[in-house]
Amino acid sequence: MNKNINYLIEFLAKSDDNKNVNFYCHILEFLKKQYIYTASKYDVKTLNILATRNKLEVALNFEDGVNQLDQILLKSINSEIKEAKEQFLKTIITTNFKKKKENFDKVETSIYKCITSYVFGLTRAIEIFYMYTKDDLKEPEVFVEFASEVHVKLIEMIFNKEEKELLEDKLKEIMGVYLSLYARYLYV
Image (cartoon, rainbow, N blue to C red):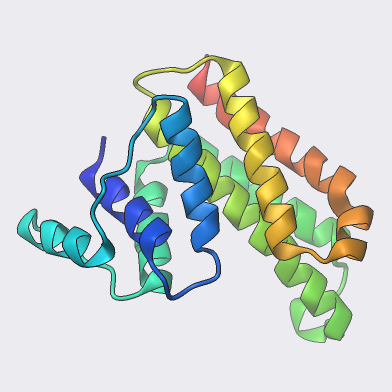
């Protein structure tokens, strides 16, 4: 497994400068529970020292760590998956937001940001799972369980109670499309 991904996921889960740390803790916990990857006991300071010794790029902060992780995943994921996920995101945006982004009112901007945050979080998590299991396949049920848990976690993190009630079914459909997209390359 890519040392960069190991370092970055642990860095993100152990950082104390962002509210989204719990999301990465949840991913690590699931990976550990399924015997896919067990995080080290090192704190962020020690992780950074080890990363430097291994000539890895050290994350400056949480956002930088997320950006680095996204770049690694982008380079590592199949080009057909990249193209399909980008096309699906465009479809979601154009069908739900008819106006140009600059013309959104305050509510539309909030909904747009929430939905794109959900999609980016979901695809990032699925790509992490994909990277860890592509050479050591787990049962499809494990993949579905992982995505379902990530889906619930993201909804809790991003949406308020009213939004959850309105969007949960649609977001579950979106999750299903992304699941089938990645499963096509993971299990075929």
